[in-house]
Image (cartoon, rainbow, N blue to C red; front, side, top):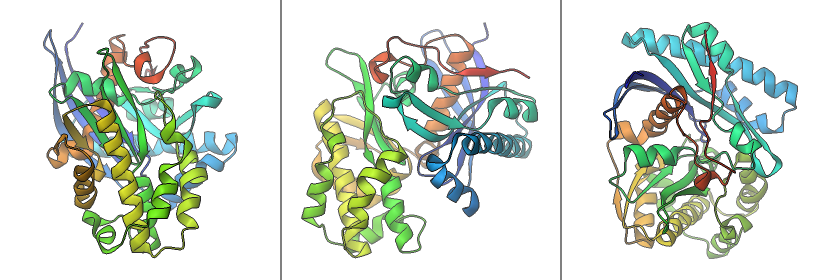
Length: 354
């Protein structure tokens, strides 16, 4: 079996800023996986696409299936452009797609971006649909990135991604890998930024201009999710039904609302770090570039915080989904029951041949 792979990872996160593409070289040296991100870029969604994704969780099944086909064709198109632009010929594509529905307690998860269409239109084998098999066996189907954290970034006691949601992965006291969603992150911050006509709050400038509103801060921290034990995971449906109403009815200025939402995120992320008892943490995802958020996070924890270079900040999840695809191709475990709460470890995903 070959121990060297060239694979393009595709990730569309819950913050909906665009599709991350990362063509990676993966090498198994007999003891560990080594990686190199050869080329990477983010293709922004058009306003029309973004709106369609925002409301998709309220669509009927026929509309969602149609969006699945649309995204499959769209992803194939941008993958072809990406590969042509950089002269890349990957062995296969590993696509997370875009999460439309994620309610594992109901046995539901749906990552749109039709793999058969992608394989047909790119002429490259596609691995996708990494979550549904675990949800079918009673697991959360999430998070999946932690196995990649263990295999690629073991020098840190924990890893945090500040994407649409914030999630943590680390080893528990029994030495098992554990991971879960901590809170909304960029999804909530971008929602407030949008009220000011901004795509996002660059460097947390808007938050810095505001004042913490203690009552709203307390209400957000009292939401039931934060008192559940892992395994647990969040979806856009939760944000819309639980957190957004508190934000919408706060009556605060945009600046004060941003300051309070950011403080809530920093507090919840720090709680996760402190509860895990970890002393060193790698932070990636777009939120890692929000200096105000990182400063407030540092206020609540004494753990050493490492912010890597921008390529890894932006493309770590695409890189890890590339690795998860390699593991699926090799028939190896890429979904851990200790993380998801499923009945057993899985080699999850669907392979679409050409």
